[in-house]
Length: 364
Image 1 (tube, rainbow, N blue to C red):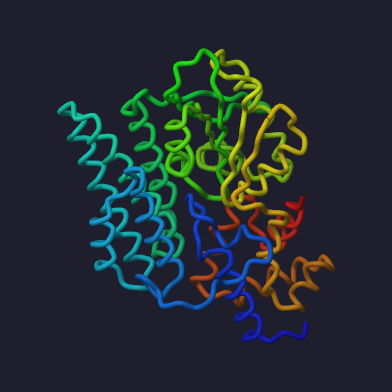
Image 2 (spheres, rainbow, N blue to C red):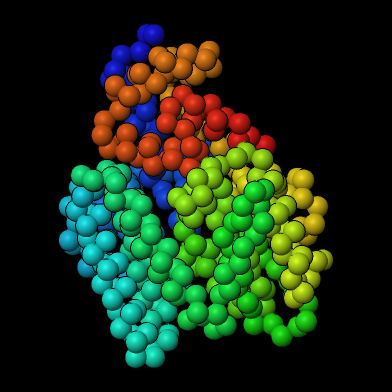
């Protein structure tokens, strides 16, 4: 293969910037835009490292619906060494612990709204920490950190007004963890917005980037962890699948069992990689009346392959798995390797080649 290590490293680094610079957690990932390219150079707001920059900006952005504490996030920026993943993980995890303790104390004294907001802050911080753990000294801390995030989500549910209802959505031979969010309308039949997450978003983001606005406008909402997402990934070992209509149709089936859902007014919103899930699903699922793909994603693989050096693309297209995997394994630096491992996890493959080939099937 006529590709030296420097050429390969430069190409893959550029590709990984596209894959990892912007997180899914409610923010739009550059990885999810077909033909994505880095935005024009601008001075960073907080950090030179693109992962640090976008995670902290996302954490700040979550303050809009009480999902973040602006002063605390700005303070955390002074406690982190730019590019040091261990320091970022530690700082965010400690902030999550602090917010969780605040929530528990408020709940013990009957301060419901204070407890609810503090649990949202804790989710924000734990979720942010997961973006740095793969590049830290102990990546095995990912699952325990996610479990803290999920526990805070569950503990926040009864503190909403009205409470968010946990539900089980029948799916193949198991059930997906779902959550029904009641809106303000008192009508007997009400419109429903299904909230579809992206490649690594949290349930907190489904509330912040859709649910909160929808319930204020008299929609009920239904969100869930689908294959490759949250609980389905970590506890049920379910991975992404390109035929997302096979996920959404059971969600619609469940929705129609609820008496309050108006079957003529079911809409769906997909953010980030959800911009692929939603168009794919509504091409087959005719019971959905309206769809939002934010942004529209025609081919998920575009940003994965756009910056790979040509010889690597040739290995991929010609099926030379061993050579492709060997070159990736021996050439990726630790930071880029951890970033790519993070992106690969929901697809369920250990092989770089197998993951890239799988991603190429996510094409409308």
